Length: 346
Image (cartoon, rainbow, N blue to C red; front, side, top):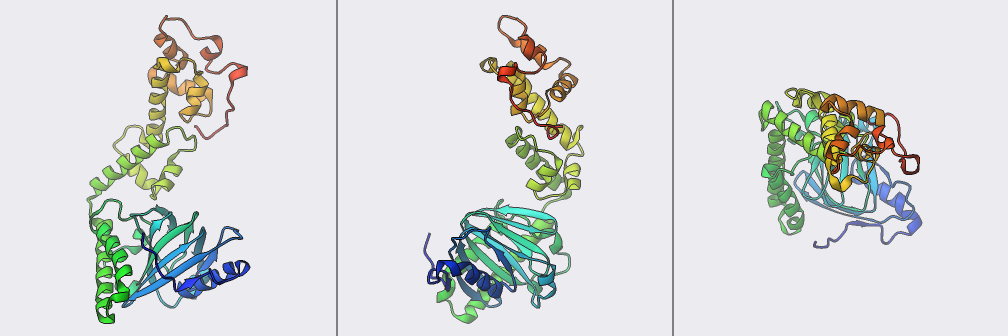
C-alpha cells in the first residue's frame, strides 16, 4: 500500500503528550469529537486531509482508539455532516440509531454527525474518512435514520464503485486543480446518494426477507456451538431488529429460536451416530453444540426424534450394545465431567 504524507503526526511529540495532542486534533478536525484510547499509554497516530470542494477526505492511521459524540456535543454542532469510515486495514464498529455495523477492508459505513454515535477501532487501523455536508444528501424519500450504521460495499455494485472512487480521489486530489476537485466531490456525493438509494429500496420486501433469512442461517451454522447464540445475539450480529428477524422467518414453522434449536439437535444426532466420536460422552457432544443443560438437551432431543440421546447412540454402536450407565443418563462419569453453566442454552 502506498505511503502517505501526514499533515498531522504524533511522531514529533513526546510520548507522554501524544494522547492529549491526538485528542485535540480529533476534536478540531472532526467537529467536537471525543476520543478515547482504551486506556493505552503508548499511542501514535497520523492524519492527512484533502478537499474535493465541500467533501473532506482524511486518511487516518493510528493505534486502537474510539471516538464518540454524545447529546451535549450534538446540541453544540453547527454544521451537519454525513461521515463515512472505509477501512484499509483493521476494522471499525459504527454505532448509531440502536444499530452497530462492523466494517472491514472493502466495506464502508455511514453515520450522521448531527446525532449521537460512536466508532470503535479495537486494533491498529488505517481508515479513509469521508465527510459530506448532510444537506447535499438529504432528499425526499431517503430515510437516513434507517441507513446509518449499515454495511455497504460487500455485495459490489454501486456501493463498491463509490468506495473505489473515494479511495482513488484521495490519492489523486493533490494533483487536481481546485475546480476539477470540486467536480470530483460532486461525483462522490452522487455515488454515495445512489448507494443509499440502493440500500433503501433496491430490493423488494420479499427479496430482502429471503436475503436476511439466508444470512441468519449462515450465521447459525458458523456459531452453532456458541451457547449465547439467541435471537438478541443474532440481531446484534446482523445489525437488524428482532422484528426483522421474526419477519424473515415468518414462513419457517419454528421461528428463529426453533431453527437454532433444530440445527443444534440435528448436529448432535449426527455426532452421536458418528463412529469416530463414540469415545466422547453425550454431555461433551451436547456442550459442543451449544447446550448448557444435559436434561434440557435430552428432553429436546426426545421431543424431536422420539428417542433419547443414549438410545440414538446405542442404535449406532457396531455391536448393538447399550452405552455405559453414565452415558445412558446423559452425563459423563465424574472423572470425565465437563463444567456446565446454567441458562444460556435454553
